[in-house]
Image (cartoon, rainbow, N blue to C red; front, side, top):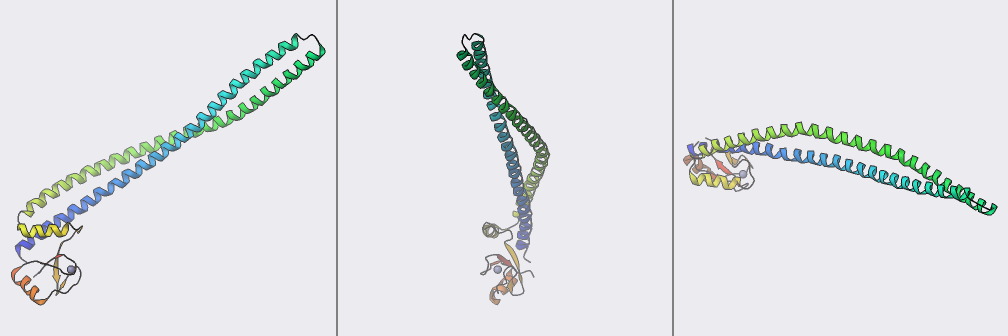
Length: 234
Ligand SMILES: [Zn+2]
């Protein structure tokens, strides 16, 4: 094998390692995004539970205010009853007093129901607060671990790039440029050996004349089948 090709293969080995490290780094992102989505979902569930509890509390205050109004109405009718001067007035005041009492009874039944719903709604809020806290605590650990992985990968990538640049200096410029152009088309491997008379990547047959030149001079050729760079291994 021509020493230029050997130098290029060493660069390719480093590029493959860098590619693997970069893939692992990219894979961390969806995990972070997934955690954010889970957290947002738990926070939304809590917000919705709080909204329900707030609505019940508002309703409770409205009904409580209405009880107050109905009680003062009741007092008014009571004092009217106390100062009646005729049987007709007494009947009318008694009827109004009864009506006020019925309204108060109704209000209080409603208050009791709202009270039950409020207890339930507040339990929901507490439950969801706890779930969100637990999720955040669990995610804190996961985030720390991911951040450590990220830092480690970034260091490894920086080291691998430095090593790769050192090795690239031993590869002739034109050969390196051609290799990099092939790799820029989203290829991980750009250089392949001949296997027998064919490209070892796509099995396209390479004409004898070109193979002879490759074997004789150590020159590389571009495969017409798949576009990779080929070299004679022997
Ligand atoms: Zn090929």
